[in-house]
Image 1 (cartoon, rainbow, N blue to C red):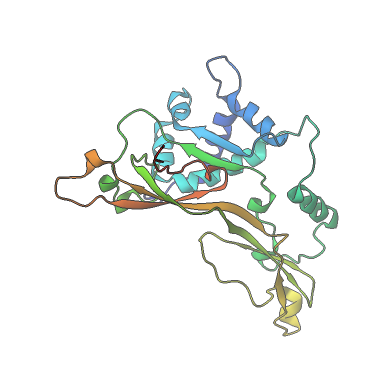
Image 2 (cartoon, rainbow, N blue to C red):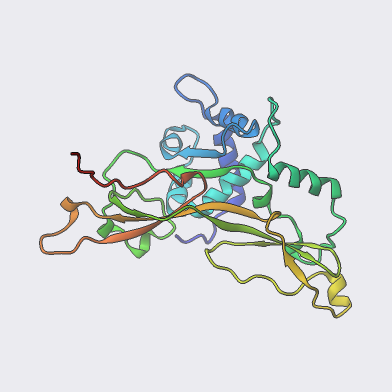
Length: 270
C-alpha cells in the first residue's frame, strides 16, 4: 500500500472516536467495556472486529480500506488510541511483575535519562499490558493458500487450511532492556523481528563524553516478552488441483493467540 500523503495522526483520531462511540446491538459501548476489563486485568486482548468498522456509520470508507491494506501499521495506531482512552481500574487486582516494574520506574522518574538517544526513552510497548488484534470479516469466501501472493504482505487476509504441525510456545523478545554498568542508564531496544542484534555499547551522553563504550547488560527480567508459537497449515484437499502436491504455509502466532490451534491424530480403540 502506498502510504504517501496519509495522515496517520488523523487516522488515530478516527480510531479513538470509533473505540469511544461504537455501540453494540444492546446499545452498550462495546470497546469501552472491553478497555475497562483490560484496566481491571480481567483480559489482556482487545479484539477489533472488521465488521464493526464496516457497520460504524461515521467511519470513512477510505479509512477502512487503509486498515485492511496496511493492517500491521494500523494495529499500532489502534494501540496508541487505546493508550489515550484506557480508563482507571475500578476493581482491585494482584500486581504482577509488569505492574511492579512499572511502579519502580515511575518512582525513579527520569533520573537515568539524558534525552540524547531515543533508545533511552521508554517505548509505549513496554508500558502496555494488553495486545491488539484485528479480526477479519466472516463474510465472503476465504483465500486458499495458492491465492495468497506477495501483494498481500501486510494486509488482513482470511485463509482456509488445516493445521498439520504446531511448535511449542516460546518467549519472543519485544523490548530489550539494558543497563550500563558505567553510567547506570537504562536503554530500551524495540525488537520487531524474530532475531535481533543486541547492543554492545552505551549510547548515553556521559559515556560518549568520557569516550567509554560502556558495559551494557541485558536485563531479562525488565525486558518484555511475548508468547510465540509457529504453526504449519496445509491447503484443503478440495483446493489442490489434480496431480499437484498440497502447498503449506507457516503461520506465526503471538501473545493471546497462542495455544488456540492444534492438530489431532486418530487413536485406534480396542
